[in-house]
Amino acid sequence: MRRKDREIDNIENIIAIMKKCDVCQLALFDEEYPYIVPLNFGFSYDGTNITLYFHGANTGKKLELIKHNNKAAFEMDCSHKLIKGKEACDCTMEYESVCGNGTIGLAEDDEKISALTCLMKQYSAESNFHFNEKHVNAVAVLKLKVNSITGKKLIH
Image 1: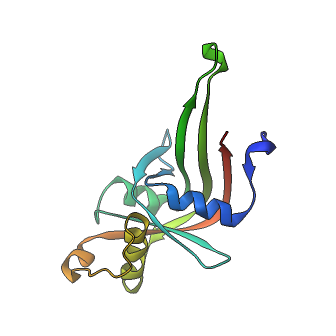
Image 2 (image 1 turned 60 degrees about the horizontal axis):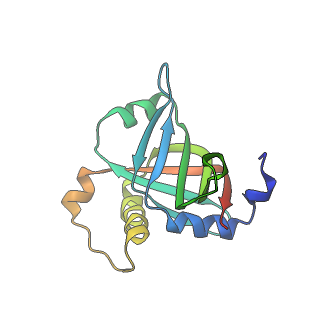
């Protein structure tokens, strides 16, 4: 990372940023250009490994791309605030961000409820959730095992 003064190298601080974010941009390999899609997400961290979870339709471009190449990258950011300067070039932006990569695939059927619970916990302070079996069976749950992750922030 070029700006070492903005780097976050403590995993607990990276996790804290992830908890503040409400959208994760997922990048997949397409034929000519990368394919990037903003998604709701959830995650788990067991003290060593981070796993991201996404949900969506059982068919579509994401699933087709993942079948051909299961390598993915992701980005999420939050805490945006414009800091004005005397001139336009003196302006800057406060932010906190996380970027990384890993391998992605479909979660197994027996993992779906725990993955969907992680998704719900990202957006709700509640801890108990009821899932309709029909809806769970109708949705695809993607599981991204994080290989590499970095954090960066500028807060004045």
